[in-house]
Image (cartoon, rainbow, N blue to C red; front, top):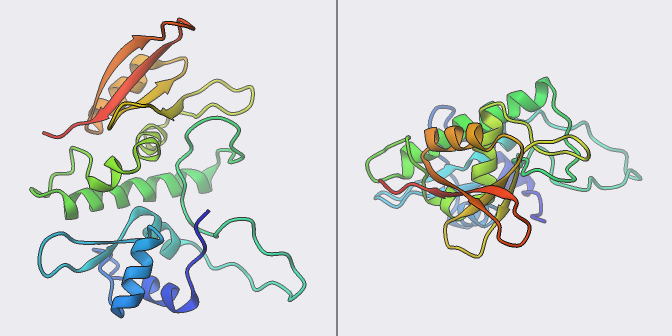
Length: 207
C-alpha cells in the first residue's frame, strides 16, 4: 500500500495549476510524487511534471479534521482515488462516489491529452497501459456500470497472463464491451475452456 505524501509534498500538490495540473517543486519533491503515482513527468521538453488522476483526487479531497494524539492511524491514505474492480470491496455507491469517479475520469482525459503524442483523448495513454485493471474498471464505473459487490452482480476486472489485456466478467458483457470500446479499448468475447464462463478480453487501442 502506498504511503501518504508528506506535508511538503501535499503543498506541492495543492499548488498545482488548477487547469492543467502542472506542478512546481524541487526535483526531489517531484520525483517522490512520481514514485507515489501522484505525478508524472511529461515525455516532451521542457519535461514538466503534472498530476495523475490520483493526484487530482488527492488535491480536490477535503482535508480530514485533525485527530487526537491517541487516535489510531487511518488504514489507507485519505483522498487517493481507487477504481472499483469488483469483488469484496467496501465502497458503497453514493453521491460522493459518483463525484469522485467523474473527477477521476476527467483527470484521466487530461492525462491522455497531455501524454499521448498527438494529444488524443480517444485512446488510452501510457499510465493506463501500466495500470490495466484499474484503467478498465474506471472506464466502466465512469459510464455508470456497477461493480460486483458481495451478493450483488456486476462487473469484475482481472489481470490476465496476456500482455496489455484484462478479463472482464459479469452479467452484461455486451454493454461492458460497448463502454470500453467507446473509451478506446478493443474487446472480444471468449469462453473459458474449463469453466465455460463467458468473459471479455479487453486491450487498450494503440491507433
